[in-house]
Image (tube, rainbow, N blue to C red; front, side, top):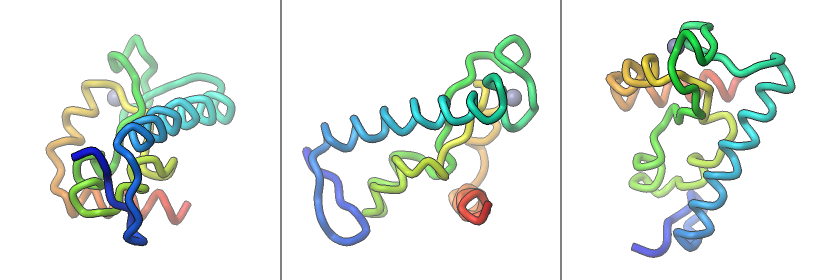
Length: 109
Ligand SMILES: [Zn+2]
């Protein structure tokens, strides 16, 4: 599959999509550092030393965004938060609905 579908029905190339996701992750981390001074895990509040390898984690997974035909959510800055690997693994155990609810809560902020 070389294209992904957006909510409005239009399709974009997988390469364009991947580039947008990559860029959004970078912007999210830059914004977070700008606002908070440094990068830390939003779940446990620890920095790199406390919660290993902090990265931009998707609330609704990229896979789910693509599968549901709402691919643009994968590069929505409100759909990503910094999490260390430890907390990210726990987050992945949440149900699809719980993850969706978390995204909607972040959008309200
Ligand atoms: Zn953590």
